[in-house]
Image (tube, rainbow, N blue to C red; front, side, top):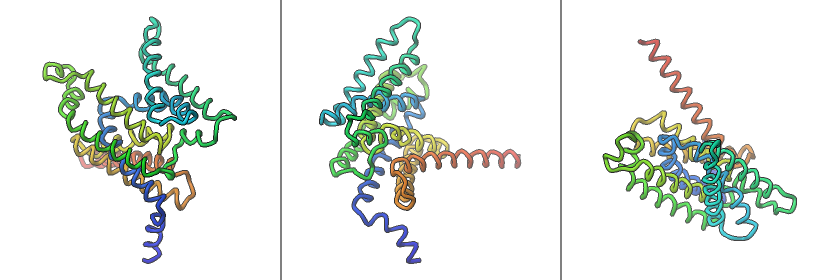
Length: 280
């Protein structure tokens, strides 16, 4: 029994792991809440595109010594302008414009990050450094969680109307376009903060996987948001355990745990349906 307790408690004896788990918990609350609306609103592609579009801005901000939030915001602005210009080409649709611009910007960011003259620390923007979070990072994550939950509470009714009845949303006093815009702004803010810990390639897992899992487990939006946050936090702890004992990358371990739980939820649902069909 003492050996089991030692195995469970030993990873948390250091300040680094405790800070990492606190960061994952705070980001999990935000990602779970915002991610549910992203999944319900069919904005998963947008959630994947945002980190890639802002990547050159993050790299340039790191090289110039300015805050990542400023670089990421500038990267998003450039991406939005480029998409708007590309979409005006008669033979290129909006989806194609987004794909071309986002892929080009991400490729540019990777070239900058992996260039021989670029400091090695810049490459961490791709995969994050959850074990290197500071007190300032925790404060930013806590502020993000508070702001996101408050905004979602205020927008809850409008998001419900716009998300489930877009055809009559305007007649009910809710604009689908404004609801989507507000959600995308929250998503962009969440990505800007989370990318510093989980990296550009793994932040999407935090936003989509727990929410997708929760959608299989809950039928009401509030319950879905709670379930998504719980899944994110539990997977964050499991990923940190795996990283500690298996000596794997912490961010990748957390993302893998989230995807694994999602696959388990799908398998459980398929088994339940098969059992119900046999009984019927």
